[in-house]
Length: 467
Ligand code: FAD
Image 1: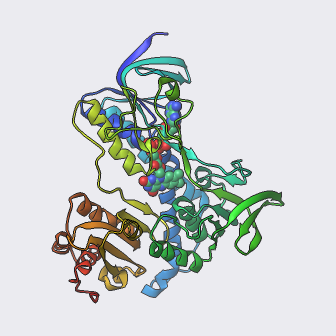
Image 2 (image 1 turned 180 degrees about the vertical axis):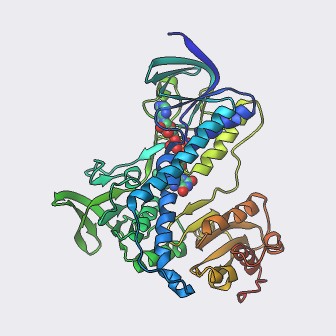
């Protein structure tokens, strides 16, 4: 078998892998991306993109009911799930097609196959046409992650399903049990509820969205209740039996055992890095106890010429974290000086209401004993939110009590996902409350909420009372 040669082999064409290939191309390096499935990885095919497409469609469908308040009469309301699915697939197709084109336009190549690292510098690929060997100076491992299943509740793709399957069910389920009250489970739970599914969420801890500030999680918990989603907190799924037309899930709750009958059980209890079976151990690449490849600031592993980025290289498992790591690794491979040296990584839950956070949370500030001030502005005081007929939620900005540096921010409500970027920029630029408060924001916009919250943190808000 004669070996092909390339500057860099990237394993995986998800947000980590394809961005690395594009950046490498921009810097004059030829990248060969090996992908066993589809270009775009989890994010574009079975993650961020299809979930948000369906969430948006379900949101529009739900919103029709509220249009009457604005004087818009809509008689009859219905949806076509098959069309909704093909629209979602169209969105995925457009974006994954764009990824393949961009890699190619930057001099890279996506090869379909399963990669195995024989040693640093030599990658074996099982392609549909047979085995191929690739000699290279650098290997970038961007193999992502996969859903974790629960002991006793293995995924069967029919009744016990993972998030990928939940995005392409043939029918909208009548009843859905979601195990895991993190962002993935709740996003899908809200989406199906809007389309009429009876949803029950089972969460082992005593709050949904564990890890988020209590007030943010409570806002989502209130909405779950309002929308008729039952939430069983401090509860554990312990058994499953098949019944006519579905399954019966046994759940241990603080009030005793409960059974939940449903068409499908969606298990969203976390994801596990794809670091095994790739040959990494054989090459001596260090992998931690949780299965993450250990990397330094440049995203180098302990083995020269082997790099790792994205979900496989550690938390947070988010596409935008993978993007940045990909740029850093590509730049270092091309001989530039770069490091993954970020002050804050935003995180968004596309729940209803949306929750978005960046930087230090109030909980973390308390744990660290930091003296902070919090400026909070409810959307009810933001004129654009009122005109949007969407006043639920608020924005809060956390500043250091003495220096007034912005340390963190959170938003809960309509378009929270869009608002958080400004706070991220402020933190990255080591900005102070005044930097945001003195910046003129266009009126009327939701972004004014960030400005007002920064002003509120220093007692200078105009449209809310300063406390
Ligand atoms: P992946 O996207 O997992 O890509 C890895 C690729 O490597 C895969 O295509 C895989 O087939 C390939 N691969 C693995 N092993 C091999 C091998 N041996 N040979 C060849 N190819 C291989 N993140 C956000 O930031 N925002 C969101 O809104 C969001 N929503 C999500 C919703 C859901 C339902 C899910 C499941 C995830 C969501 N995520 C979201 C997380 C996001 O999808 C991941 O963080 C992101 O995809 C990680 O990118 P990656 O490149 O590291 O890996």
